[in-house]
Image (spheres, rainbow, N blue to C red):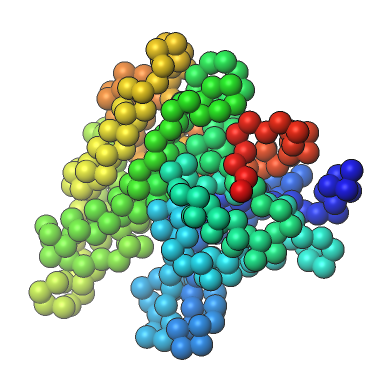
Length: 344
């Protein structure tokens, strides 16, 4: 009864605390915030100067006393204090009744993290002002957010390709039957593009440029019409600015190493799936979500490699946040018998 009373006066929050971006869902309002998981810090004073979109603009452009960092790596906390400040900033930005009641928060976490890493996420949220913290594994949150029938006695398969991790799971009866997590996702793709330019063109580019190349002309399957793009960077030998023209075919070759690792994980999950559930997947196929799923040709490549139907989620960037939010909406009803909520 007391929890119900509190819920009337608290803007409870569902949070996709991603390596690349953080999305916040507010109960009854939907997704209200979508910002990069970047924090700009004054190193001399150890003071936070900017968070989110403003901080991302500073990546690779700051003077020596200021550093723009991503406090999460591979889906887990790399810098506890900075993560705490980032969560606090996002909570304050969306929680209008700051002085009334602290919010309950549901946070999506990678399925492969340790108990210590789970504890770090929970404590960061509590220190940032959460009244209660619940952790839900990202594959389940992505499946719920993609409107898959997770509570039915049939198999649903989700592949969530984020910034730091790729999560693949087969879900049935409200739980994950088989799940795999690998530290290969959008950031690894960007790094492969950076290394490709360094090796082939003797050109040094930043991670923001690499990400832009991936978005503009990146693909993993032959396109009907190949794309080209001018890329600016610094010549490695001369140290001078230089511009080159690259093709989507060239970037496709650079991306194949991380993409093959993702395909291997998908196949491992399929190999470990019980036969009865495998038969369901022949018709239902697999849903791909996360920012990495937007890569051109990925559904076609996965379809070719697995011989299963592959569908991209309706809103792939928001699936985990929507899943956290949908669980949040039902939290009071389901509290007596939560099947897939991971609390500490």
